[in-house]
Image 1 (tube, rainbow, N blue to C red):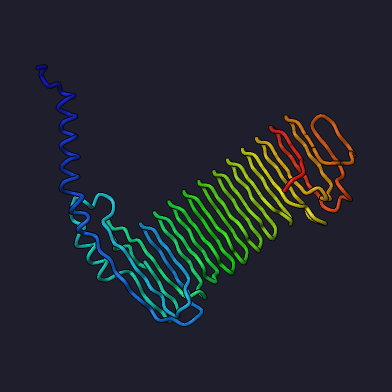
Image 2 (image 1 turned 45 degrees about the vertical axis):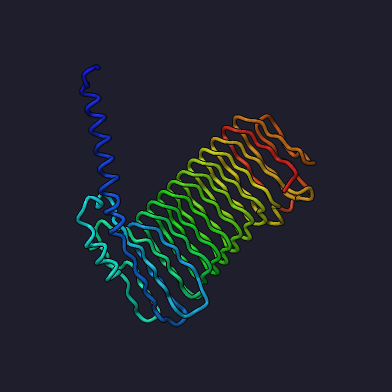
Amino acid sequence: MKPMTRRHITILSRIFLFTALAAFALPGAAAQNAAFDRSFTVSSPVRLELSNGSGSVEIKGSSDGTVHVHGKVTPGGWSIFGGSGKNVEEVAANPPLEQSGSTIRIGKNSSWLKNVTIDYQVEVPHDTEIDAGVASGGITIDNVKGPVKASSASGYVHVYRVEQDTQLNAASGSIEASGIGGSLRVSSASGDTRVADVKGELKITAASGAIRIEHPSDRVDASTASGSIEVLGANNDVKVHAISGSIQVSGNPGASRLWELKTISGSVELRVPSNASFLLSAESTSGDIRTSIPVILEEQNKHSLRAHIGNSAGRVEVHTVSGSVNVSSGS
């Protein structure tokens, strides 16, 4: 039998270490978990302020006049190796919650929390304003009147069914929003953004990530440095800018509406109904310009096109440096 080499000894040592951790550290960590439940009686309107260092947050609107907070406290980071059990128990016994009239604050002045993760599930009356932020973890908010502000430094932000204005920010993570009754402002550093059924003005800014917008009712302003942009069912003003990424817009540029679609590197696809009416100006420094709908040409050369569709009630301007432009009929 061959003698054991240094490499074999190293591998066996690592296997022993991981086995010991699985048998000893992880069960100990599970035993350190704790939870808490608190309820606060409030009168409408309610304001919820939440700040969480590590952990997911779920906030849902309900019909009663009470704020219910359920928290799950677990060791965080490398605390499974000991020393955090007491802190977990302390947090569960004295969670960072306070009430001032109809304002509920969660996580305020919680810098004393060390090596713990808190996952929150919060039920609030429907008539609630929310300002929530998480350093590491996702946020879900559903069925509140608002207004709503929600942010995550590392994690997703998902917001649904808010009656008033909404503002969302994510440094690293996806953003989803739908059923927003007021305006929507979105800022994303890295992550895809998808929004649908926004009744107010919509503005999205992304450094890196795809943007998809469905059925906007008001003006759309969307830009990304790196990523595609897709707008479906637009019928108001549209301003879409991309540095590196394709653009797809469908809808009807009605009377007195302006669609401004610009990308430096990427194609532009425009789909409009057969009865659409607008003045089209398209330019492509390096790429073809194609139309498959009836147009009345005003001016055309290899890299630009100016044409009338219908009676030219609206206006559509398309610019791309590197990429094709395609205008077709469809929804």
